[in-house]
Amino acid sequence: MVRLLVFVAVALALACGGTLAARLDPDTVNQAQFAEEEPNGVSPMLIKAQVLLDRARFSPGLIDGRLSENFTKAVAAFQAANGLPSDGKLMRETWDKLTASSAAPVLTTYQVTAKDARGPFTRRIPVRMESMAHLKRLGYRNARERLAERFHVSEELLRMLNPKSGFTKAGTSLVVPGIGRGDPPAEIGSVEVDKASRRVRVLDPSGQPLAVYPASIGSEEKPAPSGTAEVRRVVHNPTYHYDPKFAFKGIRTKRPFTIAKGPNNPVGSVWIDLSIESYGIHGTPDPGKIGTTFSHGCIRLTNWDAEDLAAMVKPGTKVDFKDETAQDGQAQ
Image (cartoon, rainbow, N blue to C red; front, top):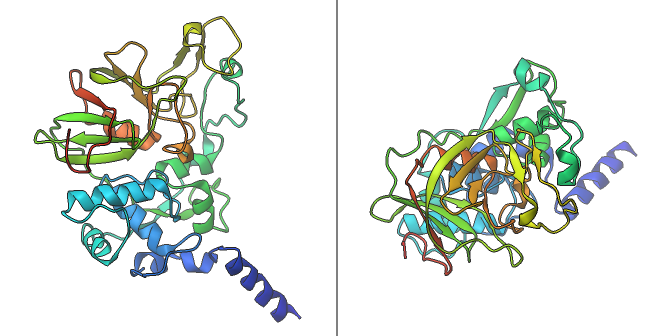
């Protein structure tokens, strides 16, 4: 009877597109090979591809081991930069070029530190921005959220990689993505905000991409600007100031308010201030929504991509807003 129940549980997991935890051990993911069939659910092959793309600064956004629009865009950008047809499909030639880009294991181990486990945490964060203004800090909700962001991975996948971990005990060994982007480039030419495809590109002085990030860029209600701007300053761990003239949908108060610092602040962990008043490039408390939702006019990246970009820009860096999609690998 027990043997029958185990068989039924396995069959149901596979039928629902689930991936068994045993398939996500480090050896399975690190040694994953290209397969023609489209993955169903969380895939070791896709985890490996996403980590390698992230490492090469063709960001897939959240590493979750699943097919997504952000993953397709990252593949297309990598293909264009490597002289391949940029259709966004992970085929053999792209896989071979991607796996040749880095030899380090894509999954590695990490020991939880006392600081990881201790916090301080902000366990309850209200939805309404006016209510957020009453908090003293917009920190991570718990250790799992902090560790997931540190390793650019979804909390769901982090749990799947570590099914027996509570993430709260210092000294615990975790399986995590080996992101390892390395030092940012010493010189960049400009930043390009592609409004149509919802991507931000960092270009070298000749116009070739050094990094490509998925982004949430404006909306019909609050569109992103057009034309050219410059970076004025970079603010790490910023507070958020709301002015009633912004008139954001869903905010009822007519008074200004300020939301405290922290990675779950509405502008995340970094603010790149632009020369167009009230506009900037910034992080987010919701990395899983990047590229799939709209913003209040600014350019929103995952916290880790925003921090990566912040390390490359300086006051005076040119930021071009493109209303039409540029071909990957070419500036317009």
